[in-house]
Length: 260
Image (cartoon, rainbow, N blue to C red; front, side, top):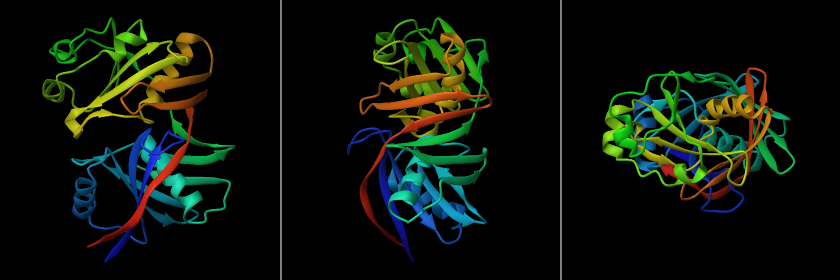
């Protein structure tokens, strides 16, 4: 069996920036265990698989350890593969997913995700979290399994050096660290050691939480964001009611075939 595989750097206009994702277009679904093995072999934050379904596609995402319900950068990468490599000519790519319908469309040089919002609310700081992060967040919020700490200054977010083993024990999904300002409207970082990702370079799904929070806090729907990981990423975002638009660029760095 031979399966197409693309590696795409999402939220970047140059190779080796942004967040790398593997994308595997399929004619039909593989066994879940095999898709998990492929994701483990790729050893990237996410591997996306999609299959044609009706007038659109169905998409699934796997980290090296588990299937996840939503992934932004691998969806952006999948849209890029459809437009750039597979001859998709429609105005908008529609993906059915565990998180409902997701969309990708071209807007000039950008690809724009259309995702549901996830509005965080104040929460009690879990025991051991401050120690795992190394710096207690002055403000703590949560949306289901997405936890978020808010600091007053971008340099505090950049300086975080978590104990990833401890953080993986305390935090069951992912932790967003964010602050206002920087080069754009806000900065962020995302840690998910419990899912096999100590730090994700650029996290589209985290911005479904970040954008409604910062749109309300800053009083404007359009936001320019930077994820200040080592690779870094730039995102153009807009709150649109109960949806959020997350724009970025993408570049293919590898094209090949898996032989199974």
